[in-house]
Image (cartoon, rainbow over all chains, first blue to last red; front, side, top):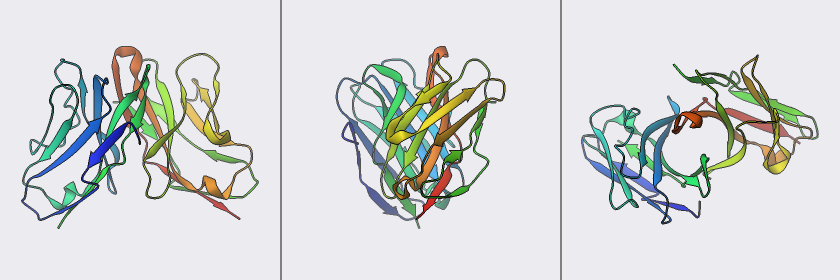
Length: 114
Length: 115
C-alpha cells in the first residue's frame, strides 16, 4: 500500500544464510507490526513496536528472528541462519491514521529459502 | 488462548447468488473483529470491522458482516456475488480495548465466484 513500502519484494537465499527485510512506513506512525504469511501456518503475528515502549515479541517463532525499529520509522526484521520453513511472505503493517484498530498492510517481502 | 476459525478452506458460489464466508472466534474480553481480502499478487486490504454498536456492519465493495456474540461469530456476507469478488478472505480479531492491537487471523477462505 502507499503508506508502507517493503524491500526487497522478493528474496531468495540459501539455507543457513542471514537475511534482512525492511519496512519503511510513512512518517508519523508510532506503531508498527510484522506478520508472516506461510502455507503451513497461515497469517501469524510476529512482533509489534509502539513508540518507545518495549516491543511485543511474543510472536517471534525462534531466537533466530529479531527486529528493530530505529528512530521510530524504518524497521528491519532479521532472520539468522535461515531454514526452509522460514519461507513465507513477511508483511509489515501500520495503524490507519486516526484509528489504531485498523491496520494498513504493506505489499510484503516474499522470502524463499533453498 | 485467543483463536479465530474459518471452517471452510474454499467457498464456491455462482455469480449473482448471495455469499457467506464463515468466521468464529474464541477470545477473553470484548473482541474487535475484522475482515480483510487478498487479491492475487496483491496485499491485504481492509474490508470492514466491528468495534461496538450495531451488530451489522457494512464495508467496502458491498460486503457486510454480522457480529453475533452468543454464537461468537462474525460471518461475511454479500447479497449478490461478482466474479471479481474471487479472492482470499481473512477474518481477524484484536483486543484493542486492552491496549493490544495485534491481530489474530483465521486460516483464510478462498472464495471462487463462478460466471
